[in-house]
Length: 253
Image (cartoon, rainbow, N blue to C red; front, side, top):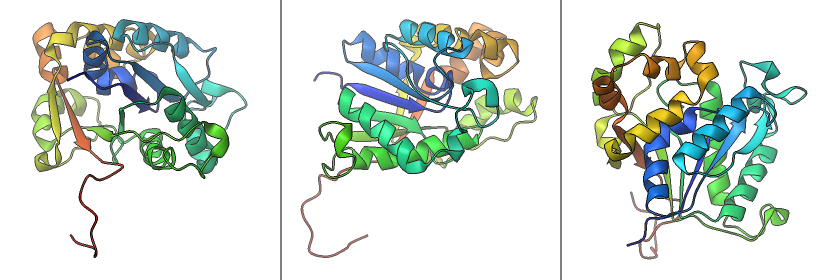
């Protein structure tokens, strides 16, 4: 069975490597088409250049950037509104255009919490992506954004409560809250250890984040066994945009 094409949609440069770098490398290694849409930061910034290097390592092509401003870093996109302040309909339309142009089998994005950190840009990207995945298949929505395309599956990158044991010591040292989900909600726990070297290299390509002590810096400081413990499994919740159930004659739970 061929490995499905995969489009990842994340808020910031580095989110793609931290949250889904393993599956991106896995799919690319198997010959599948992969790509990443990043909601924030302008294309002429240092972080955009770092993103390009990370995607090269992961085999995910060139950056596809919406160019909105990071809500906490106004200079990330001079003259552009913060992602959370931009009209939602416009952001959804931008994502619809990318989905229809790339025509992925699978879309991956943040979970409803916005991942471990709960960053507001992550949460907003989650909401916009859910709307865009549904809208992309409807020909009368965003008719100028390309021919309709309906991805077969949408996966939300997340962490189960059990992952707290791996992350808690590192995150607590930085005074960070962690947003995790009940283990029974996990649809896929993907062992990405065969691609861990590429995933870590992609994370570390975000050098400016490592230098300021953000998550890539945490990863850079860890010994290899600890990196494997934290990053060797990626967790996802499947959120189907369409159902394969037979047609019903009433609403059932």
